[in-house]
Image 1: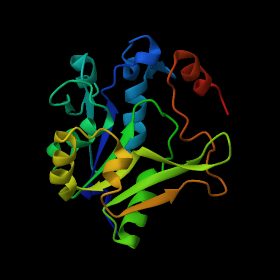
Image 2: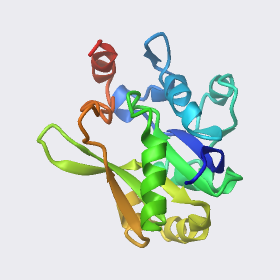
Image 3: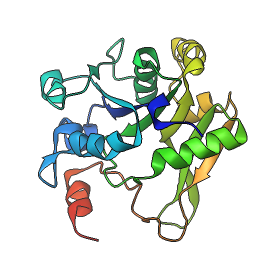
Image 4: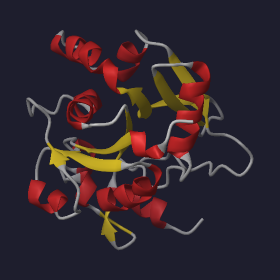
Length: 204
């Protein structure tokens, strides 16, 4: 089994927040605390170390008590830029990525990704979940990666690559379904607007 101490988690909060009117999504209130902090507290028990990827309001994120790293270069290059920051900064054999805007992700996310990665001897384990139309679809921002993928990701992003799926297709990737009995069907709903965020706050 991959030990959680061998996994670093990174909360991806580096986006523009364009669908929230340019607001810093990770700092929006969710159940009485910043959304990214809620995400961090949900991720923390699942990993050995944690960090945040953010590109503005760095002091606010640093108040969460974990390292905060911006993209390099800071041109809002999308989630893969956050993946790369995580791989460059983590000191463990594995990195797991979670976005700041999906606060109800499973509390056993990392364990199930790690089990599948090891079982299949894969390079990447990626979550899949049922969406509103009933189809099982990949959730590429929820991925567990081997640290040695860093050089591959540097080449891909330096060449202008931006799509997680296009990069992960170059490596052995295992898709991990989160549709067991008892799994929350809303676990991977993400909040792109303030209205969607308030909707997620409602008791289920």
